[in-house]
Image 1 (spheres, rainbow, N blue to C red):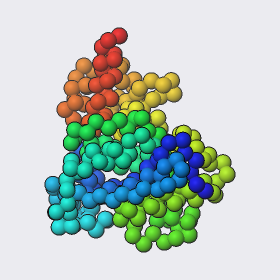
Image 2: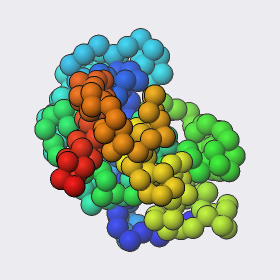
Image 3: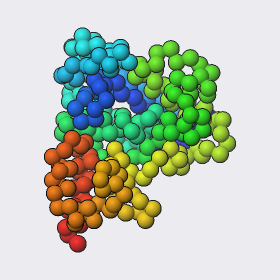
Image 4: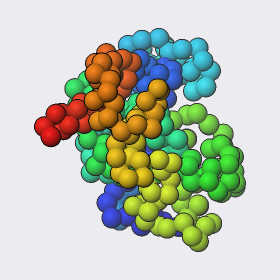
Length: 255
């Protein structure tokens, strides 16, 4: 089933030097942009991360330091990538937990102001887990009856994710072919920041979602724990998370 689109959507996947949003870097990024008429645009980028790729990461994606030593840095291609994905909704496999926050952090690091909050996110892994509880390789086999021979190659994973979502729409008659509804269905919580450190509670209040203040409204924490905001700004949090805390702080101050 082809996607019913009101605006373009990108499917993307990242390979990185490691698993830290704040201290690791992107070494490969693949994008498939699906336009509203169904036309596809495919992009694949490799970057010199200007740091060592961990042995654990290389064992997964098989990209070595030597492979990317002569590639451009992310900063050199960041504005081109931003232009490709500007105005698009965003889909991926487990993208809400890692890829989107990681890409946001890279943009912030190189001074590209890209607002991810304008996009709807569709996480194909969440749909899969709600329906079948398996991995991308298994999902590709289950839905598409194909073997994912190049698993953990960014382009292969990106293409497989796109094909799996289309197959999911074919298989499940109750799964809506509408990006707004798919985004809602594939969201596990209502995030305020990309990492989900702050979420909306049932009353729509911005609430801390980690640590000793988990479950408490952010403004209440600021009121009772004066040092909390400074701790956030000095801590090992993505820039997007710090920006959201700052926005809430400034808004509360004006009231």
